[in-house]
Image 1 (cartoon, each protein chain N blue to C red):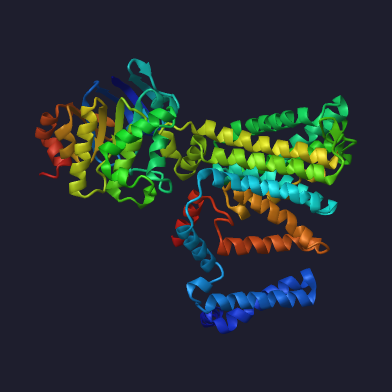
Image 2 (image 1 turned 90 degrees about the horizontal axis):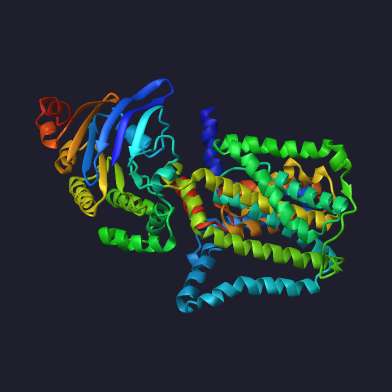
Length: 234
Length: 395
């Protein structure tokens, strides 16, 4: 479904991504792990058109997305849940969801909002509350729900568990499993390596702008280097 | 030094000094404006208001909060009016104003018509500054484009008002797009500076392009608008036309504000990156805001030319842009009724203070400072904007 070939991104003269190659097959969950500053977020930003790509190709079903503006990419079904949630704090929960469906018709939006509310009953209770008054976990749910409103076929998630209490982390991963079960392909960037690898079909380890390792989650979890670097084991 | 400052602080905070101090300050400010007797009244009024605020009256006696409470209570008692009643209220108000126009003298009607033109301008500027959150400082340029469109098309080609109205609006919108395309990648202050420059370029061009615009002498002999073959002769005709324009604009823009586009502008204002990530075509949304604001500016300009029957570059200077911006800020950025309210207040205020015209700007400055202190989100705030400001205040 998504094939990234030799992706390069530079901030000025600093090359943050030095040729990333990875593949996300349809219907799978692929995770991208790595230390802070390895380039995980930059990768997702580049995929959704928020960062200018300086080299390489982003093939989504054979079409190169590199250089397209973000709304064109969203229209093709590649949608990002940005890091740190970034809900529209002063708009209501319902308004936030409608923004996710901006590119689609009004009637579809109403139906999809009902679907999101059924996935996240908490949001239904708070539909006219301002998003800024929600708890961190609820905001993350809203950010995911808002992205679902765009009817993604490939959902890019940037650290959905960041800053959440353990029970909420488990809950978020439950929801991600449910979304996956509905047929949405996931590319998941996580620092919570254990959780991420436990639900993924395939994993990549990003190190200083390059793919350092690639393999099945079980292999990665067994890899000494990964255990040392990301699981805090010596 | 530090001790002195501390002492001053404690004085300023002590009502025994602060209350008469405020009275004295406002009295002195009012003195050149309205003479000793009225200035004394102002000082007394300020002292009285400060005392009321200090007295910690029970809430229902508080001049502002008490009224708010009373309204809340009334809402609780009275049944919620059916939607058609609520929708009818503004139209009844417009109808009442139209009826009232037959009782007003020509002078008042003329002032009210000018206020209407400013209301159109403020409504337009509010789209780009208030709703989309892009600071534009050269708004008078679009006003000028509209006015000169009618002036030139009418005097040179004898085209009528109703033909020139959409043409002037569209031409101004085109100018908006031309200005927006290269500049909208700029954010905040930079955009403000560029638009300021654009406003000045437009005025200077009008001033110097003698062969077309007749330079600083302006264009005379514009024909008044006519309706069904009857030319506009009485100030009431203009007033009714302005009223209709403002009412229709407010109605349309209020709907726009509550539409998908309006919400998208709010989202963009809140977090542009997140908005982009959600697939909002931000550049197109900004261009749309620019073009719409410019369109209203152009329409106001055509109306202005049709009313004054004379245009010159002087009417479109930087101060004019600032005035309209003040109206938007005073009324409450992003709020449609606020824009109209701000325009009415700032247009009538100088008339009330007639004869002390040279102090107009001083009064403006004072009004703006007071606003920022006591009601930073405007007199009739838009709800999202209100939260933005209130959260900012709480820090």
